[in-house]
Amino acid sequence: MSEQQFADSLGVSRGAVQQWEKPGGTAPKRANQARVADLLGISVAELVSGVSAGGRGLDVRSEVPLVSSVEAGNYTVIDNFNLLKPYDTIPVSVPIKRHTYALRVHGDSMVSEVGDSFPEGSILVVEPEMTPEPGDYVIALNESNETTFKQLVRDGGDLYLKPLNTRYPIKLLGTARVIGVVREFTKRFR
Image (cartoon, rainbow, N blue to C red; front, side, top):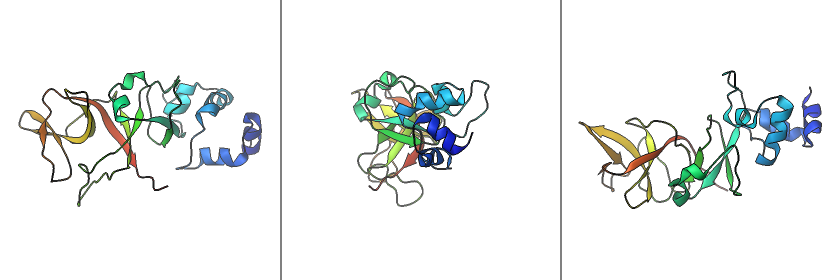
C-alpha cells in the first residue's frame, strides 16, 4: 500500500503518514491510533509499545500523557491503552507500557555544570514498571507523598537520592520509594 493509499484509508494527509514513518517524527494522535492499528493488523498496545505480540520490534513512535507531580504519585490511574482523562501527550521513542508517563522538571536540583543536566521545563519519560538500579535517574515518592527527581546512588549498603546540583544535599532513600525510572528526556522551547 502506498503512503497516499494508507493516508486515504485513515482519512489523514499523506504528510501525516510521512511524519509517522520518519525517524524522529511524530506519532499518530491518540484519536487515530485505533484506526492505524486496525489497518496494520495489530493491536493498539502493539502500536504504542512498538513491540508486536510475536516479540519483533516495530519502528513506530508513540505518545504518553504528561502528568503533574501529584498524578505521578498515583501513576497506576494512567492507562496508556485506555486513557480516559484528556491529557497533553508527549511523543516518545522508547517502548512504553501501560503506566508509562511524562513529567515536567521543576526547580534546579538536577542542573549540573558538567555531565548530565536537566533544566527546569525539561520533559522526562518515566517507566514505573522498571526495576531501578544505582546510577539510574528516578522519580521517588517520600513519606509526605511528594515526588522528587534525583539520581539513585549506592554507598556501602545504603541507597541515596542524589541531586546533580551540588547546592542540594544527598539524602538517604530511607522510607521513600522509587516509583519510576527515567527512560528519556527532552527540552521544549516553544
